[in-house]
Image (cartoon, rainbow, N blue to C red; front, side, top):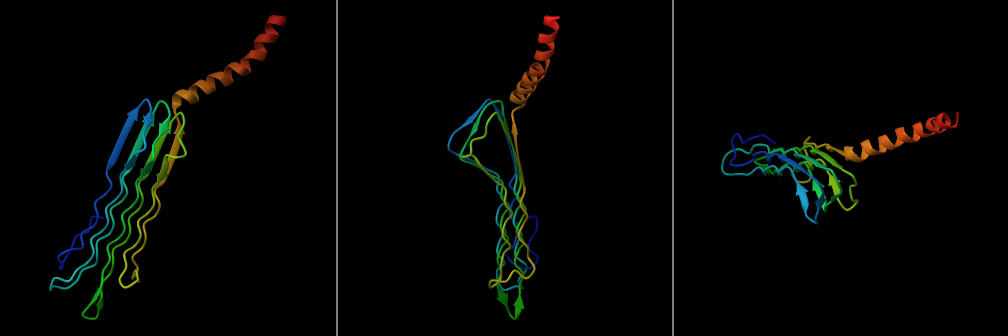
Length: 173
């Protein structure tokens, strides 16, 4: 999404989604957390030759790490769509490409199903329904993890359970 115009008065790329870092005990609420990329600007005709439209801005990065439960409405880091363009003076000016989705990392003891996580690629722009080779962005990545405190406690319980039969045998001797 870092493109810029050459001749025309518009066609800049969309802004990137940025970075969101959240850390705490729990997350509760019905709001959303977003780091979406911006839409690329459309090409225009301002009396000079057209340029290609701007590409979408990449989806951002959201890192959420909580010791307890995670409950929210949605977590989004989608890529922006490419800008559209039109034909002028017999030329088919190209639309902008869509941007890739961002990266999501969510950690907590539980992550509610209502806390939807999405990092889709943006759609390619068009010129009269044709992409002229502009491509849609690819999906980003999503990772969910149980909080380490819970994982460590479960591992301790498993080790203790494996030792119990040995301790029982030793006391019966």
